[in-house]
Length: 578
Image (cartoon, rainbow, N blue to C red):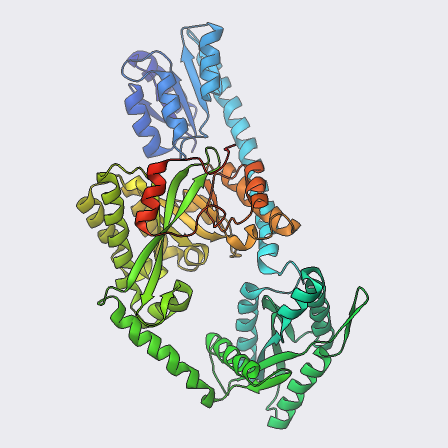
């Protein structure tokens, strides 16, 4: 049922409108002034608002301005009622975002006609937004699932395809071989012949793999010069047969490539693992193939290795690192660094992202990519996340106390904390202990965590948003599930992943994705932050396409708290704003 909010301080007129609109089948809410009207609008999110201009406490113009500042009410159609007929007054309302005016006195028929016109226009607008969302979703789904250089499935789609292949092999009681193939010394080709030739070589290799390993076999590009091969429909293959298959792959990969007058010879290292002999799980197979490829590369060029239990010697190193990780918190070896976020409107620092580093006593600074998965697998991630929240909040409070102004601090929280941690209680405790505004804190959650555990994360995020915290989607665009969660989840910010920003000025696909994300965010009244900005060209592109904020080494690496404090106190413009 269409919900209408009537804000009118004259009780008789308000009751008359409520009665007439209710008779027409609308769900009508009444408010006696602007203050109450704003509260009811935020609480009920009506489909349309009818509001008097002249009211005590909060007049109609202030009421409209307040609601237009809130993302949840910014696009609700708004009709003014006024006894004034002055064009200047009407222009003032229209500039604030009013959709229509009715001059008092008016008839109920005039009111109904105005409402019908606004609702019809809103419905048309909504249909267009829905259509654009679907088109954007379709375009982004394909781009997010496929490698833009080779058009092969990328690592995200590969994971799903491998799951399907394993399920089919289990049902049909067949074997499956997973191989990871890495071009030997590919960097030399890039350095001597140039990246353009290197890209053409990757494309040629992709076509050759597809030609030699046609469906139902599968080929994907995982990263850089690493490809994945899934060989299916194998019934109890002998060891000699498997070795022959591996050697054949290396043989056709090593045949010369003719590219722009260059005859290029290259070899590859191939790591393979067999289902179900080596593992029954997809993640286990991936780990095995990666380990086998590592040892194939160690053995020299143009070689293959099948996974064996003996290769698990490498696991000892991982275990040693995990043991060190268990003691690291007690030994206070973790540090928080802060990477500034810059407003494209002003060129100034408007926020920062807290980034975790491990100061290992023997190995030096260790990046999260080296230990976060160990923390998650060992169950240490909850303690580590709590330390991050405590430390970041304490630092923010210290900055506030000393007069250092930072609009917003972003913190990454592991998906495990949303599923099984005490995140809500922890943040309530921190906000109470350090006494700063909750909207100053922005929690970053990855797109994969949102879509994977929607039933669990939605209530937690809703409660956090109700507390006043802001929610950001990290690595946006790297997933490939429905974009409908953008409307269903309490999201404030979209972070454009660095993989799309890196080649944004040279790759039309990355540019298209970035523009689509920015347009989508603006349509939904969300803020956009581009990560990994390293060049002036990337900055200019993001300015031109009206991105809101950026972060990246073009202006600052992640720095210690005291260095960020000095930057904030300088309050300088790092570049010319839009």
